[in-house]
Amino acid sequence: MAEAADADAGVRLLQAAASGDLQEIRRLLAAGAPIDTRDGQGRTVLLLAVDANHVEIAKALLDAGASVNAQAENLDTPWLLAGARGHTEIIAMMLPRTVRSRPNRCRHVSQRALHPVRRRSPRPRHRKDQNRG
Image 1: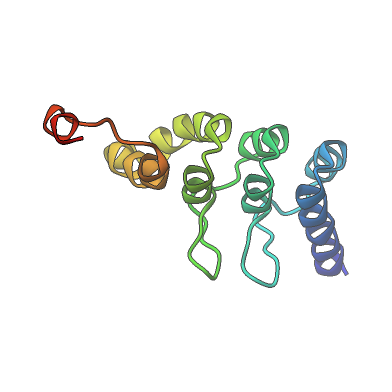
Image 2: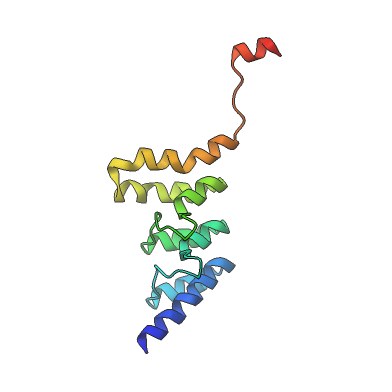
């Protein structure tokens, strides 16, 4: 019976993260809803919040201990998705948690997460290119 209640709370947590319901997230977390709940595609609650750019929900989930590196079935993680989408506020919140959890890999992880953002940014033209133009 307790397992069914946890599953139901997990489903409600996923729905609240996707819809942006911060009060419901806080209520469910306070009631002990499982933070590592995943949907049918293996997406975590934090991944859904990052996908929708729900900054305050992501903060509440991170404060509750959600993993920034939990992979969905398509191999997305909250950390990589935030970098790919350019969600800089969420990246800034995740960075200290990444440093604490893997201090020797922080630079590598942060560079990998931000790589898609750098690719989308216009590159400065070099002097040789300006002379050709």
